[in-house]
Amino acid sequence: MIRTAVPSDVPVIHSMIRELAEYERALEHARATEEQLRDALFRENPAVFALIAEDDDSGEPVGFALWFLNFSTWTGTHGVYLEDLYVRPAARGAGHGRALLAALARICVERGYERFQWWVLNWNEPSIGFYRSLGAEPMDEWTVFRLSGEPLRALAAAGAAEVPGKPEAPGTSGAPRDAVHTA
Image 1 (cartoon, rainbow, N blue to C red):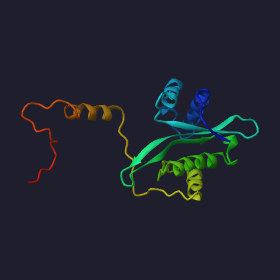
Image 2 (spheres, rainbow, N blue to C red; image 1 turned 90 degrees about the vertical axis):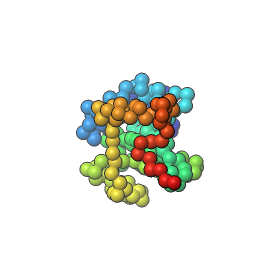
Image 3 (tube, helix red, strand yellow; image 1 turned 30 degrees about the vertical axis):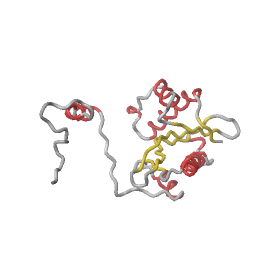
Image 4 (cartoon, rainbow, N blue to C red; image 1 turned 120 degrees about the vertical axis):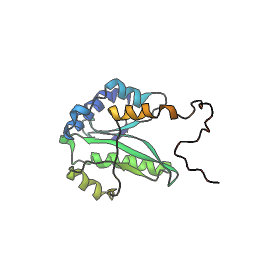
């Protein structure tokens, strides 16, 4: 069974996030706390959402999908971005992963969202094969970029003088420095 996560699911979601990070060989990067997850998922206007896959016999959570909305300027519609999909090893092969993806696909269709996207590690051949079997297509022509840590802070500091809404210095036009002006 697939259901929407509730606040009491936060400890198990947190535990499964850590299991996923270990599987992806990146446990040291999984720093989110239960409190952060609780706040992100259950604040007044959450920007991130979760589904839980439960074992049909025991009712125990065996997997989760954590997702949020994105937006396509080309289609003019929102879409679903799947941040994490995880099914515990003992429950794999029972259809939980497919059921989680199907539930998210239904959200897209019911709400008029035109895209459902996610990343997968290049070495994760079992998942890649599974996603292809569903009709998902790899976006091989795109390269993902990430800015974090010190480079993120350095760029933010370098652009501080150009923050929108900041009062202009006397004698400036307010146009970006690299803007092209035509007559």
